[in-house]
Amino acid sequence: MLLGGIMGFIILATLISRHNMEGIDKSFSSIYKDRLVPATTIIYLTENLYGKRLSLEEHLMSGNAADKSEIQSQLRAHNKNIDSLINAFEKTYLVDEEAKSLGAFKSEIAEYALLEKSVLNLCSAGQQDEGKRLFAGSGGVTFARTVRNLNELANIQSNVGKDLVRESKSDIASFGILSFLQIAMAVVIGLMLLVLIQSSAVISKPKITSDKTGYFHMN
Image (cartoon, rainbow, N blue to C red; front, side, top):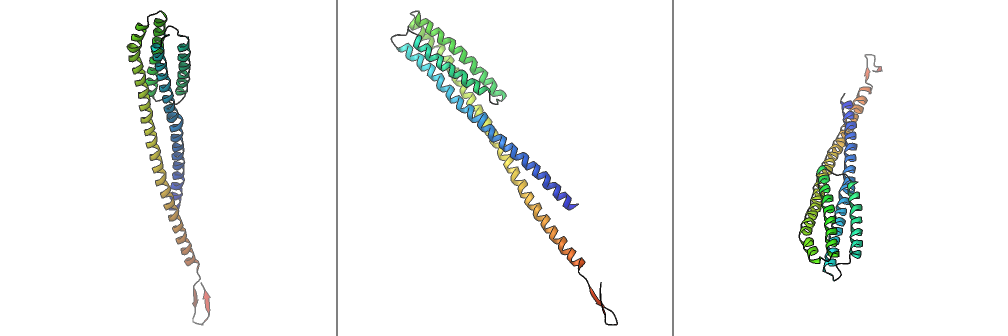
């Protein structure tokens, strides 16, 4: 019964260890696919967002603000990049807080794109000063909200990544404890087998006795 219990414990510990290893592999895969890749995506989103802002600002400061063909081409390129990055971000695993923050970011991006069109239309109509005021006023406020949404996403990514690391450390600690117990059980089994072998040898060893006639007998 003792040997059976030990063997059962070893089998159970092996299954738990395999489960822990699968959890560790899943956590590290998630850290790369669902945390590191989106974090890099946030960097590129920020880059394109600031690119839009700077391109439009340079256009407003130039002497040909009424000609909007070139700036429209630049803004379309940035918007296309942003859409592609958002689509890639949405394909990763998102916690509820991430999905909510990403939805707010998409709304801010759409609002900012409409504001850019309004600024360009004002400039084309010869109202450059009004376009500049819109760009600096409402445009600045919308741009700041959009950047805050990106910062929120980055913070969420960091927090979820920390949780995954903690889970991995817990699985590794459990795996180490189970491995130590398995080794201890193997040693116990080995000692028990040695004791059984020695006991068997003692039991099977023949005893030699003699009777009154002087003859020896094997018991």
